[in-house]
Length: 166
Image 1 (cartoon, rainbow, N blue to C red):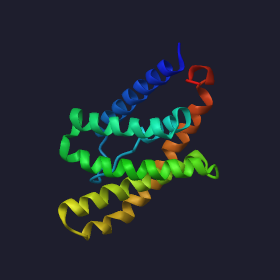
Image 2: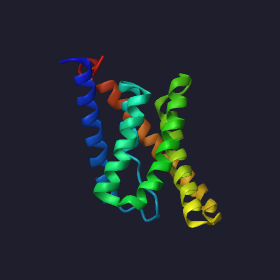
Image 3: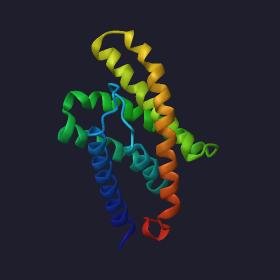
Image 4: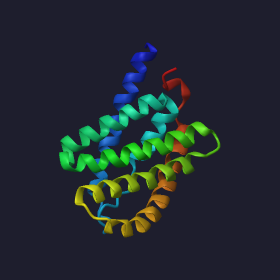
């Protein structure tokens, strides 16, 4: 199979996994508004490692669009897009700097995703009071980032390179 075809097939698989994880995540009650586990973050880290930054950014955008259309609606897409863009920016910068492990990359992504969503909410709702919620979300982001980063690291070790596009 040609490299371009393998890359496209892997991309489709990764988007599908992100959508499934996002749906499953929506069924898990956290008890705190806006808090999710961020399981698809581990898939985006895999995309950065296996496909490169441009492809990973594209997959994030596709995931945000399809999630909004399938599950949450266009209104929620603005929050997801703000969080996704900041998250990808942070993860890509740290990953490219080569001085950080995948857990640190994932923690930065999770924290920045929360920052992006809170900033979007403050702009949309025209209130700065949501900034007080940021501390709790940052703590959750650190914990969930450690989990998703560890999951990505385990998957990278377990999936043979021969299955990946060159």
